[in-house]
Image 1 (cartoon, rainbow over the protein chains, first blue to last red):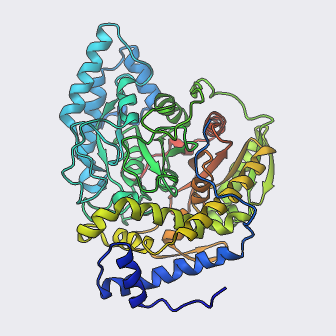
Image 2: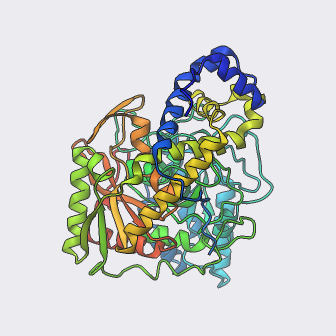
Image 3: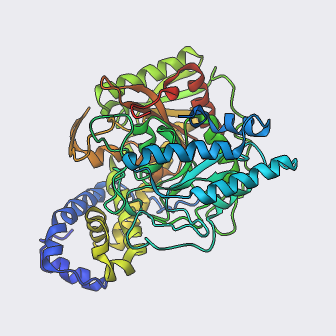
Length: 62
Length: 471
């Protein structure tokens, strides 16, 4: 696994633009802690053994 | 103030059918109470006095002509303001949709109208249903009616539904539940709220927050009223391809039985054990009450629940920003700050994160299915805390400190994730008189058993009959 990269406002700016969002540096700085928290939580899911599990959708078609 | 506002939907329906009371009289009693209390409670975004009285008069005329549509004929109710209502604005609690007037009813609204029920108005909510506190910067924060002095939150996102039903402004409502938005306000406001199985009730015409996590369901003061509403709205809908073709049972007819021999699993780790001492004690007493009535109670520990917060956040955040992307590009300033922030964060969840979250979902669903293979229902708290004061940020749970928002959704969100039916109902009060809610989780499409357990519990106890301070 690659070493975790630093998530700067510049990183967020590039990703936001890729998604078609034009947000200011100040707006991105404000959400940076929240983004970091979520990405840290999601990183922890990497340790869950899921290889044999097919992703589900919610639909129980009965 | 008229006692009519404290009658259940079942009682009102019976009295209308036997002509003991007129639907117009019932609608007027509720509209008078809304006029008297709602400036303070802010349960409603839009009150539809004129159309409600017109619908009530039509219900009365049908009755006089010998036409009665069923147990909800002439009975008032109010939907959360994310259900499309033909000719009545549907704001989603937002500024963006403040003037949006649908040309068609949501399927469930249409089904309740066909059942003869009368819409009183549209109820307050957290903007676009994206928040468990039930706050709204555009229409005002709904106020929990259980505290006459401090402004406590009602819980959300269906905050107006919780307040309106608890305070006697409407006997029933439809909420929506993506991470607990029916069960959290039910718990904090001391009412009964059912999140049905995913696919049991149509979402057509309901503003989405997260397509794969959203559930539509009833909120009322009793399990019986929830059963009546569910019976009217459940079932296949060609406008919602995720709805099931399974037949809809007569939920109300399934009530009234005993719980003797019923196998109940008390959810321990990650549920009852993380609640505050008062909530934990009340839920344990409720489990004992069911045991005394003949249920067989054992303890269950769901170990995969640890992963739910991360995985469900990834799913909800991704789906929400996908729905809101257009407005987030052009009208971001029109969202209330907390919702705008959550939507922005969702833009940074990758496709790989989303799929991994769906794998976790399969794992959690399997674990809940396995726990229910040996039991009829699972029991735990609906929320680990009672209603916080507006602005309170921190809570202390059984396993340490938490922010209020995370605490509110912690025990309900796993069941959105798994899609099982779950019902919250009052099971006690704190030392300061605030409601405590329990939660019953059932097997997929077995809402009948979930409601039967809550109904039995409500015949054994009187928590659901208590009235809040403002009443």
